[in-house]
Image (cartoon, rainbow, N blue to C red; front, side):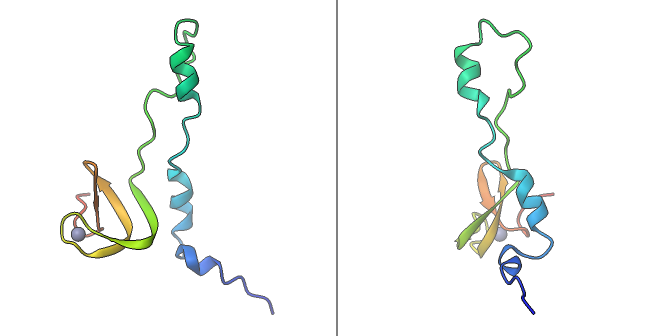
Amino acid sequence: MTRDASLGEFGVGEDDEQSTVEPAESPTDADGAAAGSTAGGDHDAPDPIQPTSRWSGEPRPCADCGTDIKRAWTDDGRLLCADCKEW
Ligand SMILES: [Zn+2]
């Protein structure tokens, strides 16, 4: 009877969404700027991907109501809790 307890650390049912918002996903950004004069249709990363929510190991205060939250939602550059985030 072996049980993988690590699943609970990520929050059941939430890890799927988390994997889609990896912040470090623009490796072509630096190269594209330098070789911009030669590439015509090599422009596949115009903007850095902006995650809609981010996890942190330590609770951080919501920018609006001050509630300590582990999952912060980005809204206009601020980190909000789910209650203050406008959907
Ligand atoms: Zn809030």
